[in-house]
Length: 386
Image 1: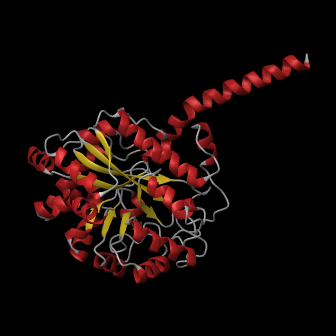
Image 2: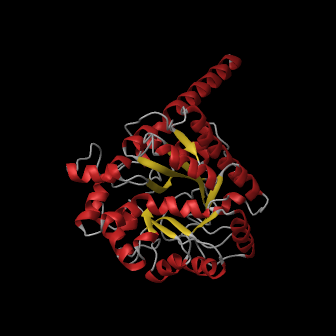
Image 3: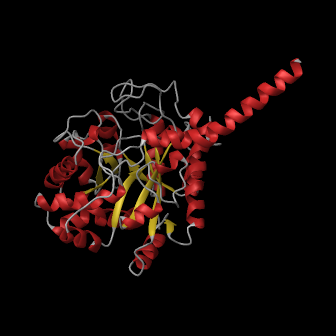
């Protein structure tokens, strides 16, 4: 009797686990990545013609790989996949790998003692404990998507590959490229040798911190919010030697100061807002914006309320225009944070709305071309490894 009961319980557990693995990942994806304004999006013929004429549209930050969504298929949830990128005329999407997120996440104060990704990763059949393995698994998945895409999705890791992609795309606007980054240097687990593994996996950008302080330095949302550590200095120097880009998104003001004082190459901020239009703890001051621009860097503007303070396309455009006027159009880009567990103002097919709003606000078409992707093309053409 007891044996039958145990077999029954085990069978029930197996069935429950299988059902959870099948159903919960999509349910979580739908819950965590809604949009304020859903497709279809409408713009005037004039705006659409201008938007479609932009030869290189790019976004600096998307966390799509976190959800294990098949990006080769079109979905009615989340913020992007390859078919929607193609419909939006996007030439380049940065895929940034999330590897640890604290429980009870907030913008003010988080420690590193909890991790809400463990259970979702178990359900996805991914590594549940090793942060570096989480990164390598997600990076490998993008490479596999590329192999399975019949040449429509190209993973770019160096200047030569980028130039080849740019040349091919002139004759085929259905081609899209992806670059790999990491959100939070805690994935290095305090071991500089892991940086080589990440480089070999195609990682070309690392956000030094995410929502908590780590071995590299302080987060804008951490407990201590301190500056760079000795290990952090080692990491930044090694990244520069490899032509891996330093991303200051989520960094504490002190960490930003310390990094800017030591770098010899351009830095980037992949997804942010600016304090000049929205006084959020994660947003950049005018002084930091100017210093980042002085390195030759670029700043990606986010598509979510904590970055731009209002859930409107107008607020995104207002932030972009403010930043363009402050540091120049050549330093401003799109940094949506698509699929970053945010309520995005629009998904990727809504990008024409932003272009149209920028026109209304007086930016020239050339400035808009730079912001919509021209800066990203130039920046990575100059700063990726040879």
